Length: 110
Image (cartoon, rainbow, N blue to C red; front, side, top):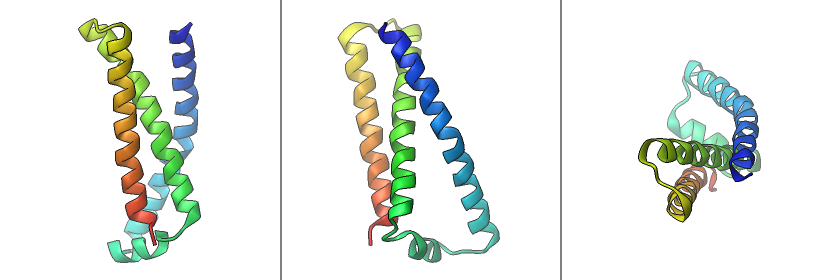
């Protein structure tokens, strides 16, 4: 039953990620073609609740999606099972959440 729930969560996270990835690509193309410097981009994102929410959700969903995918890969390739598999993959999820959250904070903090 756990595998089914994780499968469904991973599929739902992919559905959430798809428009976020497309939005990110559109913004990057706009910034690149507009010739915006790093300073100009940070000037537009710092203090923005919208961008903090957008990229915060992005980081959370990607972290969860990646941890579930890593769980499957590790189980199939290494034979890792049980609590060790859970500790490793949820530890990975927490690490990516913290690192991603730090990156979001660096971009949007006033």
